[in-house]
Image (tube, rainbow, N blue to C red; front, side):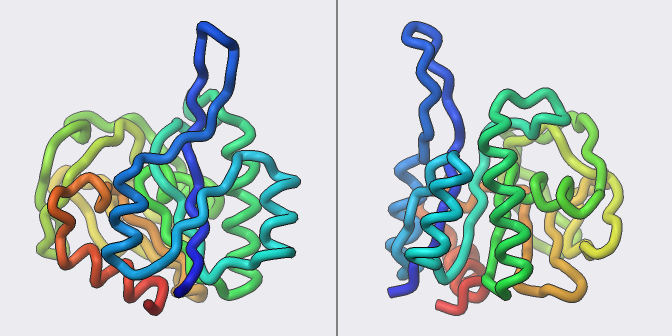
Length: 197
């Protein structure tokens, strides 16, 4: 069974001052439906580097949650770990899928700026590729700069899916496949395609 590394959001617990890594249980259920073993990754760069060296994954999935630091975020350790993972996946030809914040991380890494968008939180909207997807983000992009290429746009001109022009194993989507209940067969097939399951 292929091992796919899943990044986690950072939650701050005010009462105790703790910073916790967290991952929705929906991801484990979706992984089971897709047929891969999910490996949750701590937001600590040295641990990420050791894990990649000792137990290299077959793929990387950047999950949602937390805004990026340049856009008001408060999880610099997550930004650092995910930037490293994007570079590692690119250099090692390892499939990487960015979901929501994960796609934002890809855009930021490759130089496409984000901006505030409205009407994209807790809605479902059609895309230019014929799909209709959920939406839970308030940061998006209205352009797509090389080396990323657009795969889908929302009706109001917000970028919704991308692929790297010369590294097609790097992809991103702005919706949350794990939040559909039951999971959509089209999402299961898409994830299997990305990670060659």
